[in-house]
Length: 168
Image (cartoon, rainbow, N blue to C red):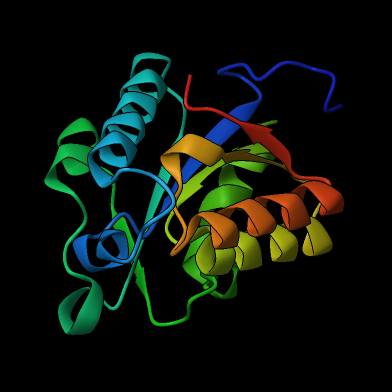
């Protein structure tokens, strides 16, 4: 596998990290409706191409709220992997879900999440450090608390080998 190899339904899988209202409320790097539209567009593309998809949530009841209904409508049967850590990679359920796809040759992990500078960054760096997965960060289906936070988190991830992409 190589980063020169294009993303295909056979070599990739998708993870949505914390697309929840209170997390989105803090996003200032992109218009929140545009962010939601891009996220749902990405989800619908994944559904059409039958790409395995993992959805994580953090502190649903106490802070973040429930995952966007528009996202859940695309994947009504997909379990939500609830956790308490800001880093999804810390959760064994998340690692197991991604390992299942990787065992099928899907080592290209496409990531869409909130917040870029925390949840996306820690997940990407941890996954790269611990595995031979390739990480593709969907810049316009992810959001940071400021434009600068999003930009510098994306820059840091690119320095570490993450491939920046758009939802299309």
